[in-house]
Length: 434
Ligand code: PMP
Image (cartoon, rainbow, N blue to C red):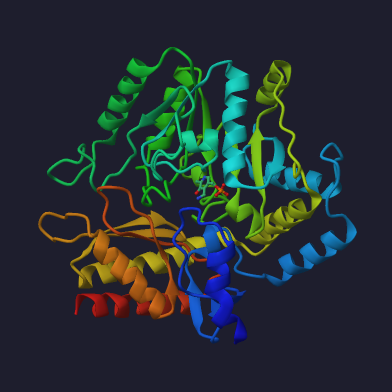
């Protein structure tokens, strides 16, 4: 292929470096769960692109809806409402608790959390925002201020009033007891006591992922979300759920917050999975919060607000996930993936922890079986070996954490593809540890 000779020279000459290390592979095609490189080699995509391609790449119905919509009605003045946008909002309301009925649509996860934070500020009239110490909510100024897992990369001060809360990291928490149990309730109380001491009396919202993904696949223990919702209520704060990665079925439920009965966020932000690889994000809230924001002068008017093209895609994604029962399938395939990872843990001493839910699974590597010190370099080596062997999975590392692999294939993944990926992982561990 001619393109290969000139690919990197042109990329290096014209593409600005944004702090992301480019992957050495050159992908020329993506279909279903598989990527194809320039030489035709197949790679299993266990990251769903950037955690977005929920139904796999180029799902035929998504391709069709994009083609039809772009040919009929692509983009309008932001103030012009269109049918696909109403349909998407309606479909969202149908799968959400009844209080969550008012939505609008944007492009990216950063935008959706930025908007959710703004809503909390307008509605409460307060400005302090609390987020987990392992959070990822985006990298724009507001969303980036609530992001701790990528480091504090604001190029200056974060937004005033940004406060960090200890993330529920059961594997290495100082609140993990000698018998292996995790005293999360004391940790949570400690976290709130620190927030209450630091707050200047202007707590507006807690923003959280119901399972922290980029922060290391941290799954809060059962009961945690309920307590969090209660603590927010007690303080008059809004609870913002950011389900960029967990939403729309990936964890085996339509939304991961549903894992605890009765937990209903005040604001829900969706992005990645909703657009299935296309730039779509949503913010959904209650009629009361909508009213309060409007009275306070809330404004969100961006070029691609409520675009019909991506809205049509989102509506189709919701239709397919429900129609084809992908929540159940994600739970089943996720169970298969998890069982396979647990088997690998028995085989390889360096797998310290396996955690996740549904098709969002992670394994944390350790460098020493006794001290359980983080196996960061080992993680890098195994993930590079996996890529060479035909499996794309990515590493999400925080300081002090081992190499954490994230495995999050599309919900359309087959049982054979899961077995194939597990085989590649097994082989890659073998290679690296040999
Ligand atoms: N929230 C979460 C939970 C995310 O994982 C991400 C992206 N990794 C974002 C927000 C930001 O989304 P985007 O990159 O589309 O701005």
